[in-house]
Image 1 (cartoon, rainbow, N blue to C red):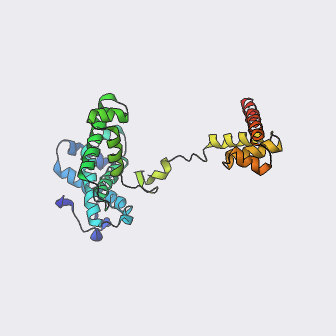
Image 2 (cartoon, helix red, strand yellow):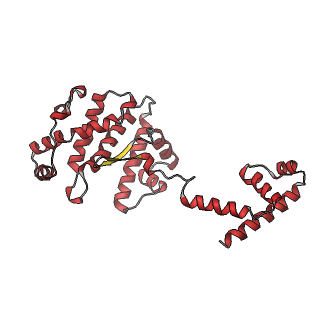
Image 3 (cartoon, rainbow, N blue to C red):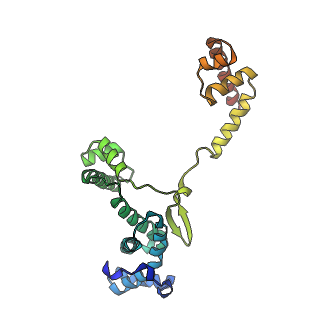
Length: 260
């Protein structure tokens, strides 16, 4: 790595080579044939990619020189493992690799120290998962991972949780031609998904067909979380009456929703 270490504050991006697509293709052919000069040129031509990634980790209070070196390791791994025949842009493949390398570094150097035994357990579980995924071509269950690693499932869960590094919603997942996909872009909003919105409208419509007292009881019971006794005290009837009215209201709602 010493060959690629630079003073990041002194990096002049205008002096870094910009590779055209035709040049990239030709360089990769040479790289695959063992041409170390072509590999060096390709690394230099993608240092901007590393710089753009480490800027996103500026809030971690880590030394930027260190992050740059780690990012370069991720870049080199990307070059060594990239397959141009898959039709994927190199940046699309490389950015997650660079990010992953930096995250591993941040995780392993986290101020919250994780014991070596926990790390060993977690890494054994990760290795077992990779083996199972490769052999079965499917995502293995926790029980299968535990059996493969010879470690109790509870211990695996605890160890994997211990080594996790907190992720920001604004952490990048990958970049494709300048369009960055962030973690928040891959998280569904269960409160606002269209099907939930439609269900809410249907339920609201169904409740409008209840009597005023039944509607009020359902609101108190299921939207405010009150017990039948609390509802009975509030509307001055017996708990048994509340129970009967509640059952009648729920039956009416079910019947209405079944006709939609």
